Length: 286
Image (cartoon, rainbow, N blue to C red; front, side, top):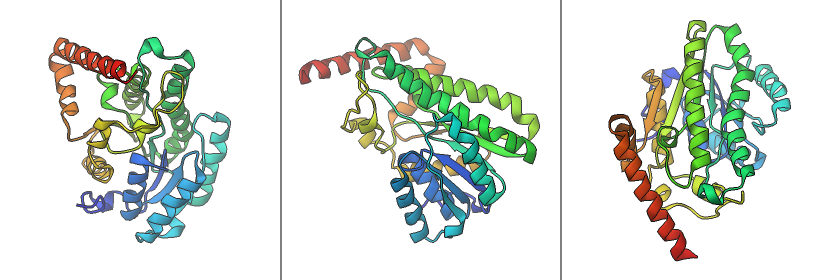
């Protein structure tokens, strides 16, 4: 089933949607699905060549080139945000939906992780999302409507090994946007948190080691996760249905959400076993 057939296309027809992290993974899949549903899409990420590729593939799939805007952006370049917002307004006149999707992960034990890695993860995954959101909020307030989404993670609900910085960032993201929802509802602005499990993207190979270098290798769990196109389809369905928190995934990690809620002690013990397994693999590879 395609993403465009699995969601109510009327929900997105003509809407202006700004997606950060649109050059790969979930952001790319959402950009393609939304453009295929008639949305006017703004693609942002640091790699302009990859954004152009995604745009060209959207056009090849039938999207109108006039409805697509490539807007290169580093979300932690806060000084660049006013001009980015102005460029979108100049082109489309409004912003109906912001999808905060930029981010990166981590694969290292705390004892092996430089403090700079934590700073990088927090700034990119948390402060960057907050900065982009704050840049667009006044526009939505003036419009009297808008929808802000953020890609969090199961790791924003459960503390898992090798991801202390990533979990800290995603827990912070969940807290910020849940809090924001309470503050802007009366202004006609909706907030949705997306909670993916293992999705087949390049997040594993891009994840930072303790020194801050990319791992350069994919995770087995990521490679066996949900197809990214199916993930985008599920997210669009959740948006169409008005869900304020969209959990998306097909593997057992999704059961962790229920386990952490109903039996946190059991969740803690399970994660300790996972950490022990990770240490054993690390020692075997040494």
